[in-house]
Image (cartoon, rainbow, N blue to C red; front, side, top):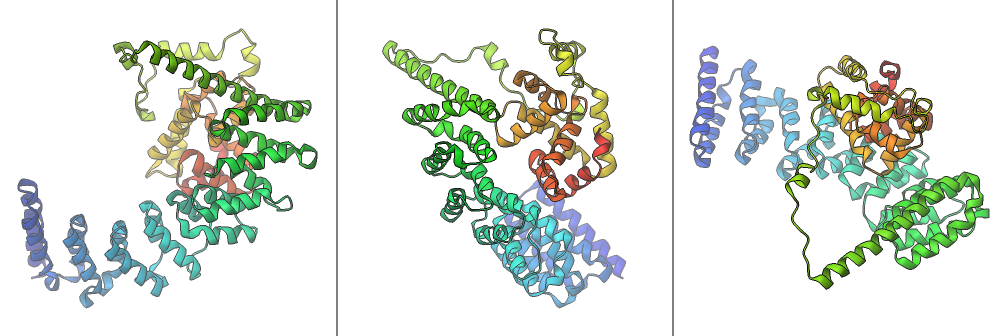
Length: 478
């Protein structure tokens, strides 16, 4: 009898799908959901999950979601509550679903598990962030770098107090400052400003390294300027952080501020340690000033001549940026491979000395693929693609992350030339030991394992669990 009922159920399910594809009418679809729900009391225990799966498959419909919630409260489906809850979390943006999940998990912590936690992370929802924060306050979850990063990614404003508390408790300081800097609230910006302004504050340098992100660029510039005007009072580390952070502020400065900054920087060139970053900043100041002048002159000429910008030619359109292909589908023509090799091994500046280990290697890319597959066979392809694409993206970027990766390359491949680094990064994982270089450099820069893991999740946009395995198996990528 049970088999017969289940067979009828499957026929109805198949009919529902077929009917929807052919007609697609909302009212008919809802009627099918209603008809299916009426059979809830006739379903055999061992077929209940298959029955629930029907509503899960239709959960884009508000009515199907409503039926799932009712099944959750149905006395005949108590043994399937966990299964229903795990599937409802995929719709945590729905306020009715969120209210149920929040009420159930907060009142019954045993429902909360690693699978549900991962689903909360996957949702990238403010509701997920709120639930995680509530669980932390209820001591049912602990704040860690992964949750901090999630608060940062979702820009969850209500997390600011616990992030500040965590810093003041000397825990996950770098991660919390990073999150605070990316959450655009008055409280967050005030905390950064006060921390960066307090000479006695133990984490002042970390605050200074993120201060440039605040909306109040004038305030950030004033703080950085006061440090450079009193160099004898500051450590070399503080001066370096200030100079590098100012590179991010330059585009927001007016002409008078740029001239003022150049005058402040010139006397500091006597400090050999500061010479290189100062020259970089001065070069940036002059380049931007020159670009703005050229742009103004061009705009004026255009206005005077009453000309218009011509439409791009067919040749120019062909040069538009193409989407990055999957690494598994990349096939570099022999001619292009040879040109890349030649470019990286030019003899004009003793390249063999500077780029002794930097060469195109399809074998290395395959090695990375093989080892990623060993570590996490289910989704290694996405991780591989994220890493490959990150290198390519960083080749044309001046962000904080790209500069970190570029410094890793400079140290590994013994070159300071930006064009060489850019050429290497554009080849992604097809450069010998490319991933290994970044892993070793990250390990040297961050002595703590949790910080190494956190750094890799940011550099390559990969899961924390994957970053953990990579950190624990660095030698696989040598």
